[in-house]
Length: 176
Image (cartoon, rainbow, N blue to C red):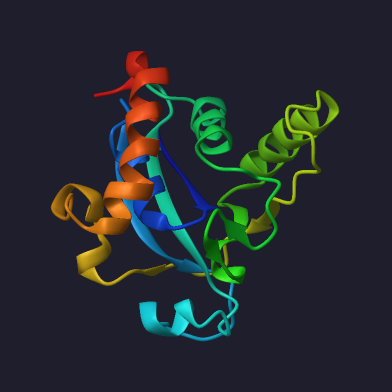
């Protein structure tokens, strides 16, 4: 069965590139959610005033890849203890967030987060929010599969590429 979860973990280019490389992921769509304005543009979201988060809507075949695995990769790819930022990307649009599509996914994500906090995987408290998905706005087309289409972009070279290389090394057994 195809399931969906929408994830925010900093800039959506990195999360999109990693998620789309996983066996069982049917689609990975960068976009915006969590704010109040309708149909926000990338430029508007970048101001940090819309309340929207840069996210990736991940559709996956849960007979091939479980929600547990998707969440494991989500927690691994970013620092969920940084409030409203990831590295040099600063602002509420870069916050760590999980937007669930079902009550079952809500309970699963809450349990996983509680287990991670209890086991003290990170020294600092996890600030990732868990919220219902209300509306998802796909990002402009040029953001889709951005890393593969723009490998020489400086941000991709210095921020995205090292994360993806490490991700592919650690999770090589789960790649397409």
